[in-house]
Length: 427
Image 1 (cartoon, rainbow, N blue to C red):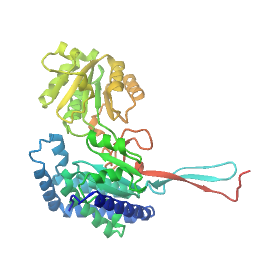
Image 2 (image 1 turned 90 degrees about the horizontal axis):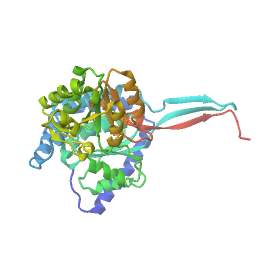
Image 3 (image 1 turned 30 degrees about the vertical axis):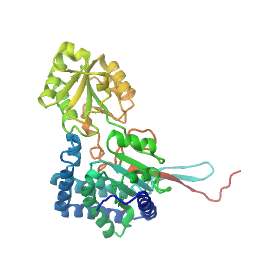
Image 4 (image 1 turned 120 degrees about the vertical axis):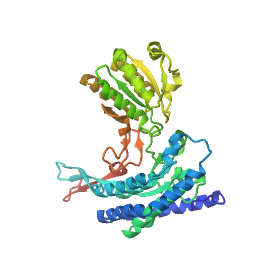
């Protein structure tokens, strides 16, 4: 069971051992066969389904422990596991097993005039540290994706989801044992002491190669500020939808409501709606009515209130707020140019969508906005590795180095160069 430990020295000793074990496991995984990894993943899926009642019981303990704490509905939603969710975890593991093994893939190959043959080949990153809050499903997603890419992973879940994560982790270890892979390939930090996070951010004496945070803004900010190893992360998902005057109205209503209200607590939920000034008379009120009927609170700009008073006035802070709730800020902009200006001013560079039939508008949106994910005539809630065909994701990165957007199996690899010669020397 996950527990507090006696003192800082105990935490340091525990984390140091975890780091050493992970590094040793990573060396074995780097050369593990595709068959062994796939056997482990499929056995993990079987184990999760077999342990469904145990996992739900553990989740019930976690849910009882957060009662009365005044947590946001979005937090409770992420924490809650259902039979459908557990089946989805197992299905994702099987899907990852079906993926092509990225390790050893030749990304590019070429010959030099001197006869050298050069190949760029995918290799595992090594040891990945994943720090997450309230999302017990991350335990399975992260463990499986790291394993498929030949990486060892150290999982540090939040204290609120400790029982659920431990129950899922037991199933992952069963898969590793069945495939005769090192049990330390997927480790979960056995303490809820916050000092364990600091130890991971330090890199565990060089054991950790990459950190991936999954959680709220304060957690991600701490990781980005304190980590002494590379980080794959996004600080927040301040996602926008722009509805152009050329947009099909029924399509726009359907997409906007889905993007905001399908799941308000995910990082791909739309937080700001921008309406073309040329569409005020045709699109604005029908879309706002559709949102209101769906239970969404609207914070409207002065221009919107001038046309349709009655909504809550939007402040400057609204344009910078990731609500993660049934709230959306709405502004009128001067066409695609105005939308681009607003998004480039306030966006967190996560995900943006344009609803338009004018392909020149779409081209400008795609070319002039520098977010990790851009969509045309589709909901921002598709900002998800599973929806991208990656079998889930370990996170979404808004950085520009190495990995950007959903971080799946391929993004969890690096590469090395293999150079073959026939006796060449350099003059």
